Length: 129
Image (cartoon, rainbow, N blue to C red; front, side):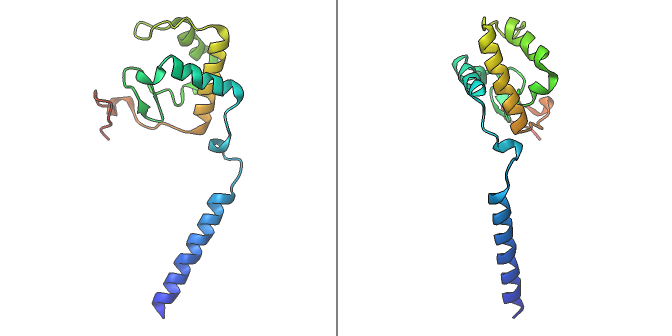
């Protein structure tokens, strides 16, 4: 008898959790990217940014993870995108490409968090947590 009660409670809890997951709306991760952000994703792919940078902890390890770089502000991102750095080449992006890439990085920032500290990234690109 006890086994049936426990099984019924587990099935009910599973059904309630499933209904909750599939009926929630308006979560930040559920917001589709704008057309500008989609164009920025194409710039990201076209310039092969993922070979050096990571999003959500996936990608290259030469540059920093850019999942939450938009938190630092548009001026910060624009300076790097416009001029490059000693380690990052200047891709000679025009203002439209910079705006598109910025929109893409803002969308990524709203959709997730990267909690892996830089010192935990091994030279092979894997994590040592």
